[in-house]
Image (cartoon, rainbow, N blue to C red; front, side, top):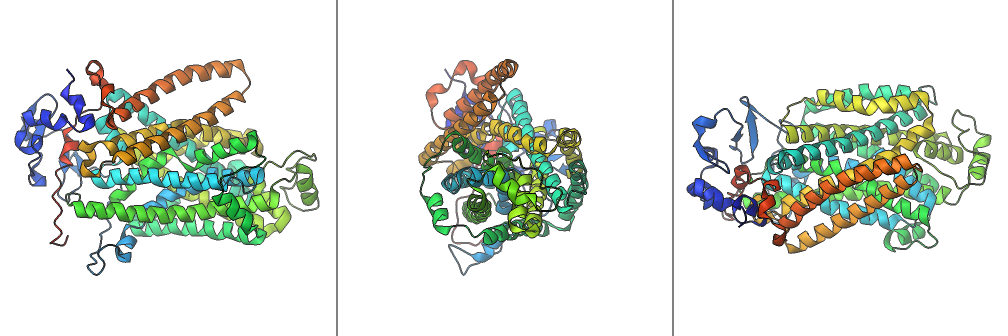
Length: 598
């Protein structure tokens, strides 16, 4: 006989078990005034009055959201300011005023699609395969949008972001492992931003500021930018919008300057083909998917949506918030896609099929500290964000180089800031630690800068940009630890109520996650096979056993949540998700009252 504490995975059992303890408040889902829901505290084993648990974390739900209170102070995961949603009775289905109020989180989320790792993937795609992989970029962006929709819905419906949900629902050991994996992804992403910013500073200073100097500068400027949130949430979001605009203008300038073939561009975007492609092109296609869909972005987006005033006890408001956040995310990712297309098209038009010798001859007579980068041979041209700027300068003048560097700097700085917020949300959610963003920056930036600084001092730019390959592999490995939990929780009816994924979304989400994770694992296998030493193979094999075991555990939980009930096992139910009464409290939503305004 299966344990009822495990039966909540398919929408049954948890409320029944709690009903034996608190039948009036939870088991029968009788709605009570939200501020009174902690009069009785229910757990899996016992029920007790609030007097005996007054020292435990409580919940402030006066505004319809759930924020734990620790030591008498609100435990907030986002900025103190909440953006109000205006009434617009003139427009029933769609309102630009409301869309504007919801605009912000999606654009901050979209910055992860424009970080230096993505820009490098774009330019390599153009130089290796021309326009032939644009359809892969389009497909990856659409998949990313659908997965971000799940993350946003989780935050809107429950009032808890993904890290908080993992903390409440997974047992201790899986929870700690998840936190470590996500932290690795965030630190790896931060290292890429540091590398990109340092390279941009080096290019803008005409080599006067060395790479290690650029690495150190990124410490100072990050603290400076973080002061901006003191001026209000909307101003901070506007600043991120400015950085995205800078990227659009700079990379758009390069696009206009090169004048790509529009016919070939459209063909590559909408016709899935790759005539004459081989292993390099296949690996590049895999790299595009790995660069676009980033694990920490799921945690970030699920937290960012909490910055809007949404009464989660009102189904109409929740449904409206889900709609506008999806529209805003679609617009934001469309803009990020266009900017990525600019970069791919520039390098596809100007440098696809070129050799090192051609570029060497073009740059030979140019003055500047960067023109000696290219070998005098007939090997195919290989570029990165550093060489890419130099090549643009050789062919299209110094202005193209400096404008490119400004765009890379904007990409690095914007993604550094959003990465900092991701780290804060993850640490607070998993560990219930209240760290300031500045303390968080000191920790993650110290970890990220140490190896980057050593490489910048003792090696050259080739080794520095080569670190991006390893970092892309690292983040590819972490992807299941974001995608599987978000599909699990958004499919659980006790968590999402009527907003839980339907059968179509469960199947589509499962297939998408399987495809994305398989592609990224292939990417990792290819990278490991290039290491060429038996010691590395042994280490990789041992790590793979532990890695695949944990992924299998998360997959098992996810499959049960998706409705594969025969996988439920009473003997191992203590490994399953925890039946937490706080989750069930989220489901006491008032029936939609269309006759009265919010």
